[in-house]
Length: 492
Image (tube, rainbow, N blue to C red; front, side, top):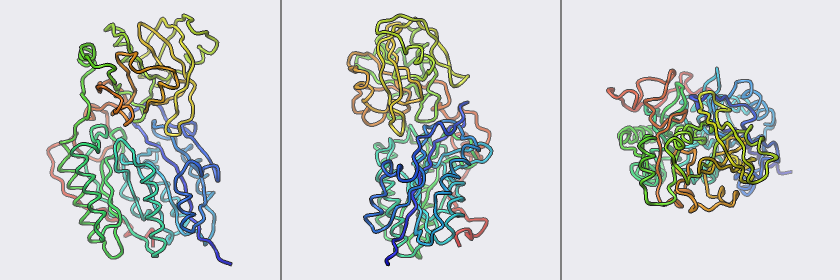
């Protein structure tokens, strides 16, 4: 009887934000278990087409938020580990992690996940990880993982491609009996991800270097990670990671140092793709702008970066400045959504909006009219989120029962709206995601206050390894590959 080799697959991803008052819990995750997770990943069919049996464990994908409570982390991780069978036919493990999961009292959740998986499967089973480009790579992960592959686009349009590439790396290593050790070089830079987009320089040139390196036979896989600027952790910051081909470890070290130096040299060239302005100045410009509709980012409360999504500060400021004709898409306030449950379209009511999640968020009083019910889509799982459309002070506001960033044009279809009916459309985002960017006649990023503040020098950090740019500028740095304190014995 021919025994089919097996590959374990698991997803446990969360992008943390240490600067928000909202802690992440199990409720923040979209979850599926065992065979039910298969439709949510893109690699099971690939593994089976290559002659392996895919062993699903858990799919746990969280909306970006604050640090994860350790008890919740331990519970979810335990469910992943207990689903990995004690089976000699396990040939490899494929994981999808974010890379910037911060766990209270623990630190890097991604490191702890990888350590636990390695302890379960032993030293001779290759482990391959797909990471977000904004991962805060803890260099100690090189002691437990074999292959690491990161996104190469920002905004992220290559998620499925990256997941598949990590799967291909794993199959390759299994077939040649190879357990590579990634070379990791940390770069002391907090790169604001919204200012580093890969369709313009210097980002496009940096990514081109990755593809060129991958074409060299000495390098199995190079990746560059920008880090998450809102994680206050000792492992926060950028990193270059290179997976070597057999016997080419020295080449991988040279390549990793070259990538790290490239990012360091370009660190002060990153620019936001859209215009950026402080709120007061930006509203003046909005009112004078002839292009309609103008797409505006409320950057300080960016839900995709872990913002609470419930700050009504910009709505309040626009009301004070008599801004009309705007669509605010949207803001989170479950009590308000519930209060609209039995209202008829056109019903007038008084409400308080915002500040139901984060005590630091602005709350505003409104005399409003209920327009209609609708849905936003949860992110990244795209599950429907109960929402309502209300009108107040000459503007429309979409209010959702859960944190749900608007990343594409589906919001207009879901609420039967036309973009050109508005002068301004305001999103709780940083950079505009591709579909919105393409649809926008013009765009503006307002540098609003909040836990996703775009000016990292204004953020309150306590745990970062210093010195680090741009908080510190007068220091000399040279790339040095990570050398394990345990001599790499964890995989031996």
